[in-house]
Image (cartoon, rainbow, N blue to C red; front, top):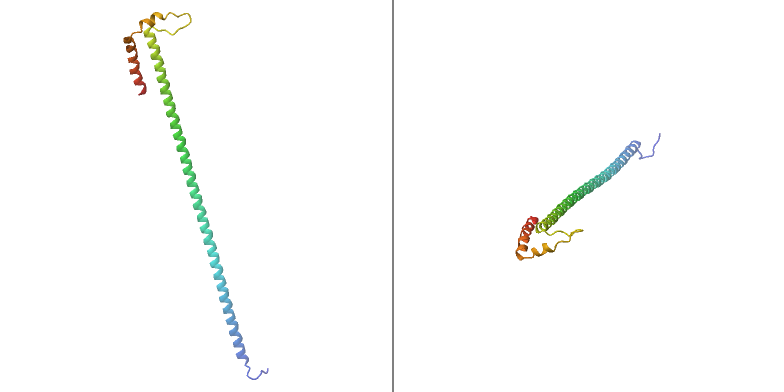
Length: 154
């Protein structure tokens, strides 16, 4: 086979092989850069996803803690309300007991004084009223009542 003058096939073949190697190296480098870029993008995406998940978990933890605090507050409020109700009930019972004692004392004083509450058929009180009109009698009857009144407040 004849070749043109100054045209060496072996040299041409070496040149083609070198160009192919250079092209392959260039493509390999481009491919490596592309792969590296894709890996970096995927790594960044995964990191962002991890951060979002961590943030979501933290928000959920904060919400749960807030719910727990709210429940504790509600429970404390309920307990306090119960204490107040119980204290009011006890206070009411004390007052009722004191009122009952006063009514009993007044009734006893009436009985001791001989003053009766007018009932049907009993209107003979004029003699009792006259005999108890003195200041000494009043003082004698009021003093025990005042002492008992002091006991009621305790």
